[in-house]
Figure 1 (cartoon, one colour):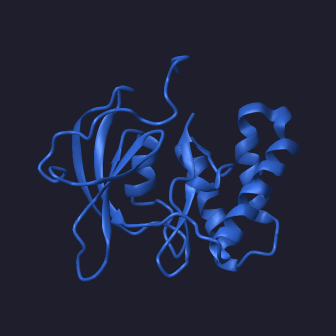
Figure 2 (figure 1 turned 90 degrees about the vertical axis):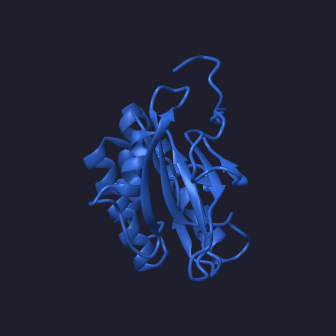
Figure 3 (figure 1 turned 90 degrees about the horizontal axis):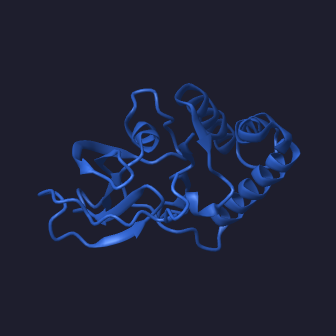
Length: 191
């Protein structure tokens, strides 16, 4: 990776008919999020993904699914390449919201802090510390719901099978639905 690389993707929104005139609502290290039309009252966004790992997280047939994972409506294919060298993929997903101050925020903070603590416990294993820290969370009851525990186990399986690294230190990688449900929105990155 370049020393001067920005932590937030700086590419413009790619030129594609689905994206024309859409308002940008967010950016991450490897994605751009723009508004999409609501369908049957369900708010949606287009996630423009430049990471193969993120694309797999959102579209693979064996990706984690369930209450705490994003609902994916369509994979609209590729459009050009990002400045980081990977193709952009346009994926239509449910719109999620930043964590507020309720239960989802509390659980997200607990997951993030517990993950950080586990990383510190296993830091002598270098790159593998993140996977081992996730395993620690997936098998150790820490007071969150069974559904969250099952979601952590599903996330662990995904990271192992796809060679991804967990990214749970920042609560920014967790979001929520309007009803307050915690969602693992961006919990992985490439090795």
